[in-house]
Amino acid sequence: MIAETVCSAASAAGLGIVAVTAYRKRFLAATRIAAYSLVPVGLVMTGIVGWVADTAFSPSAWAGFVVLGGAWLLFMTTRAVERRGGGTRKERRAARAAQRDAVAPAASAPSLGPATRPAARRAATPRATGSGDDFSDIEAILKKHGI
Image (cartoon, rainbow, N blue to C red):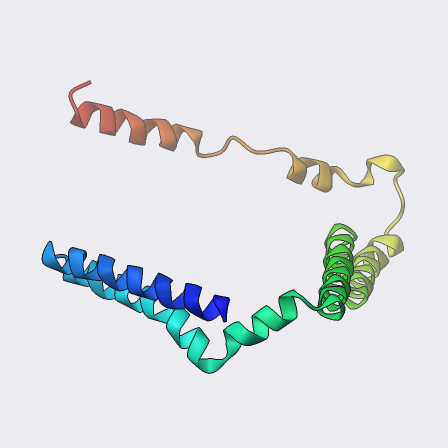
C-alpha cells in the first residue's frame, strides 16, 4: 500500500515538473519527463510493484538472488579463464592443428640448427620502410600553413 502511494506521488511530482518545463517552451524535454513520470504509475497498475514489495521481504527470494549471483560469478570466472587461456577447447585444438601443419613442411627440410627461423625474427621487428613518405606529407602540411 505504501509503495503504491509513493509511486503515485512520484508520478504527480514528475507531471508537475512537466507542466513547468512545457511552460518554458521546452516541449521535447517535457515529453521525455512525462514518459518517465508515467512509469511508476504503470508499474503499480500492472502489479509489479506489489510483486517487488512481496519479494523484498521474503528470505527465500533473497536466497534465490544469492544463488543467482553465485551462478553469475561462476559464469564470469569461467569466461575470464577461457579468454586468458586462449579460447575454447575447440579453438585451442584448431590452433594446435594449424601449428602442426605449419611445422610439418619445415620438418622435412634439412635442419640448420637454431638459426633456421630468421624470417620469424625479422617479422617481429618493425621495418622503417616508407618513413620518408610520412615526413614529406608533414612537410607539405606545414608549408601549406606557412610554417
